Length: 58
Image 1 (cartoon, rainbow, N blue to C red):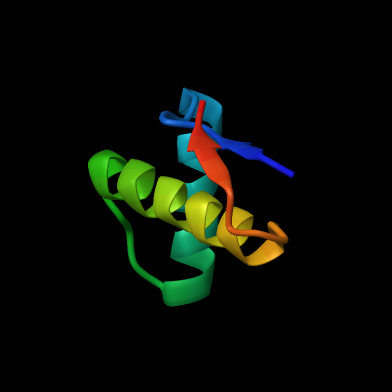
Image 2 (cartoon, rainbow, N blue to C red):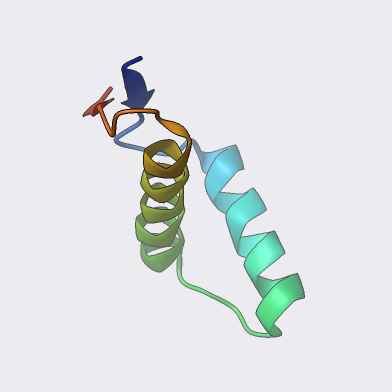
C-alpha cells in the first residue's frame, strides 16, 4: 500500500498544530517550526502504519 504524505499544511492545520503544541508543552512554536514539525509527524506516522514503508510525497 502506498501512502501519500502532504508536502504542506493549510493555515488551519498549522494553527491547530500550534494550539496542540502549546497545550502539550506549555510554550509557543513559530509558524515555520509548526509546519516543519507537523509534516515530520505526518511522515513518521505514515511510515509506522505503512506495511512496507512505501510512502510518497503528495
